[in-house]
Length: 399
Image (tube, rainbow, N blue to C red; front, side, top):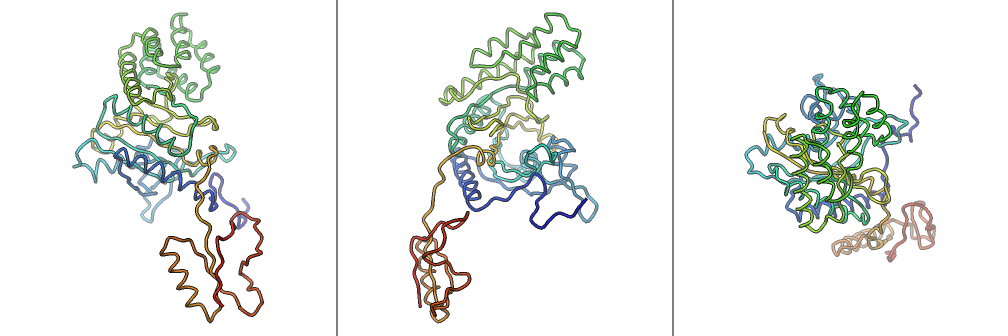
């Protein structure tokens, strides 16, 4: 393998130039402020965790974890999500805290990817976790907050697809009793949105017409509140029925929030993390094909850290919003430029400090004062081309 050139980066990572970094921070700040208004307090967790704790609990496959060894030979991982680290904190540092606990975060996460896949190995998430409440109201709260967070980030046109892993599990067990591999094959097709493959898998299972019709019927369970009644008619499994009952109650709370117009029920959804146990959802922006938000209920995750507590939450994919949603960035004031000679350095820097104390953006530069332009100075006639230079509101010279 050839040595990388000095300007090359590993596949899946990127540089954020000032305009992109400013926009990303703008999204982060606006979303975190929204979450703060809902009573969620911000938390920060380490970039590196133990593989045997957070790495295993994250449900990210081993092939997608970035692993490394510390100086004692212990296997560590770069965090692949934030939910598992927060579960660790809630079960340890916050174990005496009264439930429910509401936490928010903004962090970068890491997942190894195939170089040809064109996906990011490092990306940013802004999200919340609501721990200690298993009610439909708690699930509806995080969905409603996800909607408001998307709006706060600048996303105007979007839909939230709402599902429940219990319904699919119940239906598959009803039709494919004690056939776990066949169930997993069908779930794999649904996870990849491969509906043609899903139908082909069904056709190869040697089922009765009635059984095949039940499995294919789930593909039609997408829409509004009426999907709940259709789902109850499709399956008689107790788990499937209790799951739909819970989902219907979530929908009723979303109607009370006044946000159900942004939501549709999609019972083909199964979520891409194995720790989900109940309601799941994804948010899609009109401009972007892949989800910009995802979340759901994970009532068994905290048990892995020694605390039995239900939980639900979501995360926004903030870098996808940055890349895919065209919104007007709030532009700050142009900086004031102060130029000074060596003899007037003290006066020039004092004026810069005074202007900064008043909230102004100020840049400074030394110039020779003898009529010759300094080699690094930018003067009134500087070119306005390039990615960074935006001009100055005023140039003040001390000479």
